[in-house]
Image 1: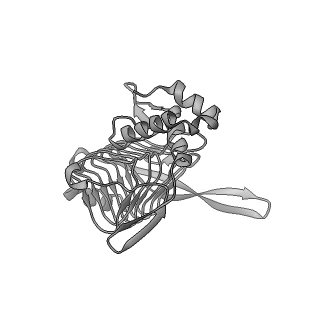
Image 2: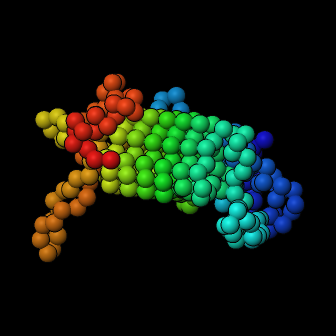
Image 3: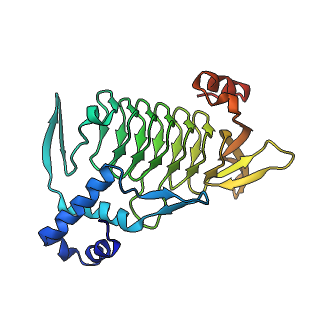
Length: 271
């Protein structure tokens, strides 16, 4: 059973980590995270997400109680404190060499890991594709039937513990070489075209109406997004800084992957 007060006591007094019972308790918590029974952030009935700060602290505390060790996977050798995730056949997960996921990351059935990396604390729900050289950072929350295209970088966050993780909701399509970091939140079925960067402070501007509508660090559901720029005055003159532009909405007919590319082409979005 997860008891936040216990973790807070270990956090306040690291000497307690010398107690075998404390060590075993933290290991039990990480096992729960690995199996998806506990997660760093969870959706609420009102559509918001609640971050479990004490659980993030437990993950951080797991590092000092682990010892460096050598592990071998075929011809590959690793030297680290963290075990690698195993048992993919029983989990119903397809893993293409040399994909790597750390123990303490939850990966649901039907997920496909092309050669990619998933860090501890991450949560990847059913049917999601993590394509070649994509990275899912610590504590990132990835929904069902998400597509993370080649080279996508999903940022991780452990500290500060009050910081929200990156959230990618169900059905989102993240195009090649996109970067989503700093607790940015991508809504359900949103489509990010190739090369879009979304940070916690990124300006995301909906230009589909007669007047621009601005969001910060959040992409609304069904949005189709491309990279853009904004003029900004500096001492040396006017220059353009990056932003993201919402140029359309994903239609019900584009929920199928076979028609998704058509929707992107309609909005002149590259993937």
